[in-house]
Length: 175
Image (tube, rainbow, N blue to C red; front, side, top):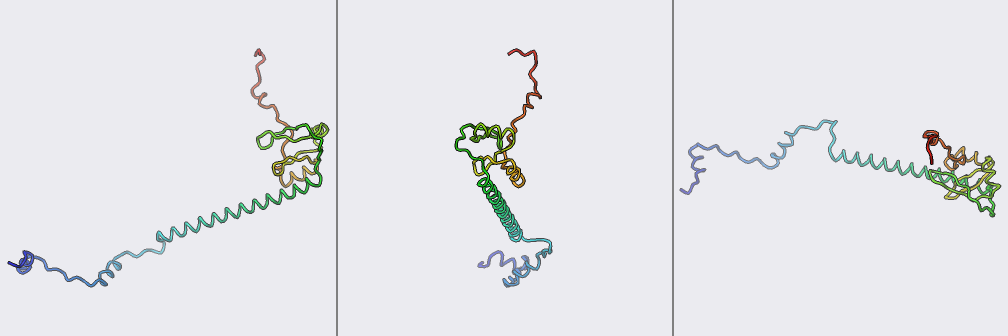
């Protein structure tokens, strides 16, 4: 009775015989051959990641290049404006009055003399913005700057009272 039940059943022919194990090389070769082959249109996950990373890198490089180009143009514009300011700026060290105006949604001011206030109102001189400062220039130079950098020229015309026309105060209202 040293034989196990399995061995006894095999001896009687009641149990199926074991298949001989195949060599490892053949076992590996069979599953690869059984796999379906990839079509040329399908790409692997690694290739997809490489393609995506390459596109992201190219987009970042384009964004950096665009930013550099905009910075270079801004520096050129500022250099031109600075040259015009040095040539023709209307400066008066005795200026004590403030001329207020709205620029980029905020109230700004520049120091002027009473004569310069009249000239600004008449339109013979104007204000230009450069590097945090406001400078007075003749109208011809302001128009020249407006050709290549209109965002550096604040509007000195003043605000219109259109809001009041849209919502007029009733005549029967007593204050």
